[in-house]
Length: 143
Length: 109
Image (cartoon, rainbow over all chains, first blue to last red; front, side, top):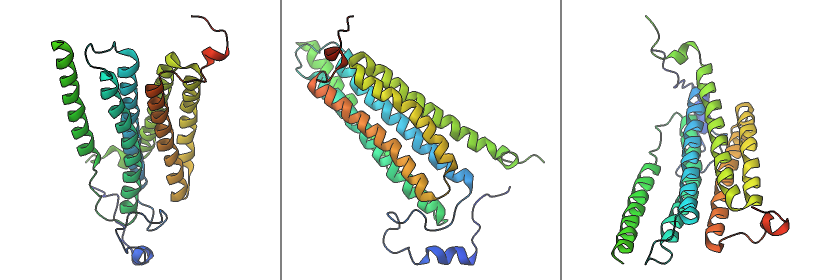
């Protein structure tokens, strides 16, 4: 019943009025006003969850390269699968920080939240790596 | 009528969830460090020290007053993950790190 956000008083809005030029993303994190603490905390948890995902991707890539026996007939087959996973992990971590900032800025300005690109990035990359691993397994099975 | 959201009664729940999220993240760092320990003792130990550091960082973030401060602290998490990814990439490309403890100390097994 009690909607936590949206206390839009006059003086608070004037605060960010001068800073809304451009895309409104790469600006001073102090601009705007402090949102409801629960929103700040939820944004932080989302960032942390993406970083755990990133760590899991790095470990998966490392595990493929270091622990799996080599694929017969496919030289560097393990590297082919593991290195993209490690790079994806780093990319997810960096992107999640960028999105955390973007979301926090939107919360401070009482603006609609920007849409996250991470689900699309993660889904397409994992689909691609999955297809690649199917090809590697098939080739090594044929030879 | 009961409130829609239990947090309207106790907003401390959100803070507690966030504390737990930091703890899970620290444990994830520890898991990565443990996995790396198998491969390279030095790199593994360095990564293991990241786990308590991340946990402490969570406490700093919960106390940070200025938004820019919080932003800088969270950047450290991304930096840590990126460094670990780079170390993993180096390990994957070079096999074993040249500065392995196994080469320095007469460790057996």
